Amino acid sequence: MIKRLFCYRFMIMMTLDQFWKFLNTVRKKSFTEIILCLFFLVLIFAYYCVNVFHILPCMYRLPSVLYLTHMLSLTFMVFNLLANFLAVMYADSSVIGRLLTISKYTSKEDITYCYVCQCNVPLRCWHCDICNVCILTRDHHCTFSTTCVGHYNRRYFLWFLLYLSVASFYEIILISYYTYYKVTIKFSDLMVLVPFQSVLTGFHLTAGQIFVVLLTLNFIAVTISSLLLIYHLDKVCKGLVCHEKQESIYDLGLMRNLETVFGEKWYITWISPFIESKLPYNGIDWQSHVDQYKTK
Ligand SMILES: [Zn+2]
Ligand SMILES: [Zn+2]
Image (cartoon, rainbow, N blue to C red; front, top):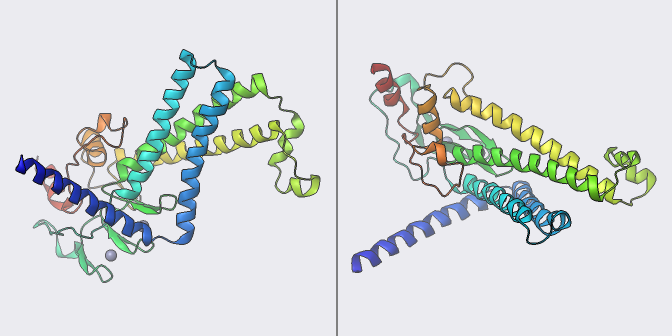
């Protein structure tokens, strides 16, 4: 009993410690980044509310099977969008608080020193000028989530991109279906897409114009997110990060490359970011893995 209580206390302490680390990273973000991030969170919330409380009840009777199917699919997508987005911010890939060991296989030319972080930089680790810290297996800095995508949060970033493209595509179908039956879109409504036209013609939005804007926004979102997803998945499959342009010496084969990013249970990590999937490498000691692989 006492042992269990101690265990719970330890878990709470660890969670609080991680949460405190997370708050510290948020505090260091620039004002613009925090505004962008909040804007994005509000947008996801608005997307859910408009669909569940307006569009779906107008199309299907409550609580019909079709309504529930759409509502549950939307909830699943929005949950994964939000949770993966927050996980990108929360999972820390920086070198802070990590024991940076250097493998015996690492040659002296490969060792670099970061004067800002005051540490020997591991292989595939780069200093981010925006986060002002070295990031393990650094992929890139994501402005929307105000954080660097690296060894421990790349999985969440990729699933976030997937759910963004799926949710936008789903929304295009839903809105097209809704407008076909409920809203008449005239050719003149397309004028809303011309920049500054409201300054010339006066600001009075019609329902048709609102749906033209929504459809356009979703088209942009689906195009950008799917292109980004294809680009990043291609890198993952080849065992590369964005910084590495040529053929990777860390290419350990498709399955191992997927495990390196998504963890041992890579095939089910799409279901939820809360599914634990242990990463095979620590993001610090790359050289020994390459040598192990080569000697196999
Ligand atoms: Zn650094
Ligand atoms: Zn960064």
